[in-house]
Length: 187
Image 1 (cartoon, rainbow, N blue to C red):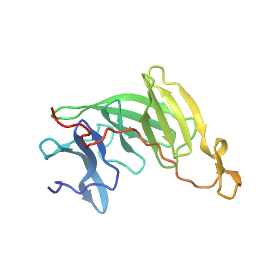
Image 2 (cartoon, one colour):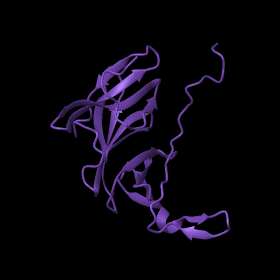
Image 3 (tube, rainbow, N blue to C red):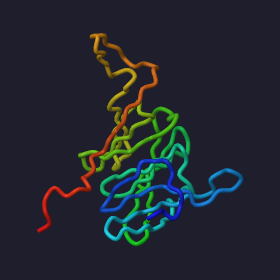
Image 4 (cartoon, rainbow, N blue to C red):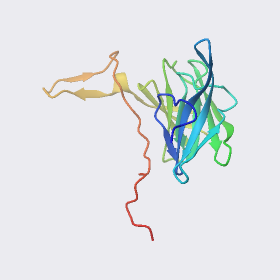
């Protein structure tokens, strides 16, 4: 089954038996005017279309979709210093609510990615793949966990050790996602 709109080149989010993507809804003069969120249900193999959060009509290059606490999360990066975290309540129509606004201690250049933590009311924020912060959703405090250019020491095969410093390296936060394949037979 083909999706009703072109899907943007982003990794899909898998939650509760559905995949979520940002999809191109309309363009004018070569610019994106609006996006929608497409949900593909693995139960009935159908697509449904849902609006973006009310903060923006399209997923910009600096915004991300991810999963937090079993909910679809939209990280709006409106400026290089501020982000807003929106969560969607699942149902026939996604219902968005603003979870938190955060002022970053450093400016982002590209993306801020949110990833769940095992601690209640805390999430991790990866800024440009270089810094990882722990955000307390209860009081808004940020704790720096790691500054990858300064804190990570790399080992090369020849025994040489180095720090990344200003070198551009890619690091990823990969959230745990349950497998789509059954490991036990149906009862």
